[in-house]
Length: 186
Image 1: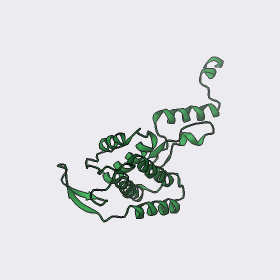
Image 2: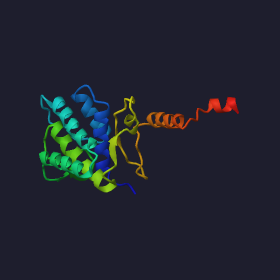
Image 3: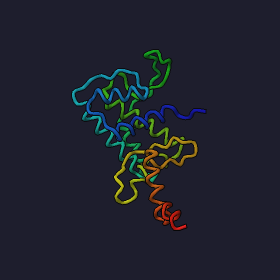
Image 4: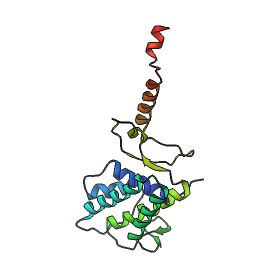
């Protein structure tokens, strides 16, 4: 069963924009297209700057570790993007819901999509299913990437295999198991 596609693509898009910000509006739109957003966006001169602010606001939700604080921040952001859901059929996609008013500029669309998508993701998968890469919890590790846990078991803590491996090596070394030394001394 495929759970919550609206929530999943929306939070993964938000994380992608946070972890690897595009250089301009076209880059943001290109990334939105990669994540399945096919609608056109009404252009506005400050789209890029306002979209970066939307992502920064969304990161406040990511960084909130207390579920109630996370919910409060997310509710504030959804209230700022308030629009009634609309049933639409465009670009050959078939009938589906949009959580925004028609013809809104890019940052307003993304605020609504990120808010609803994040709320769906957290409420269906668990309030703990997003945060920062656990590798960055170790002093001196620079990773601060966002992790959106879409795994079946709900235990994703690292943004990549590289970060997970780096953490595993640190744990191994902390236990005193250097591996090579044990073979030479054996």
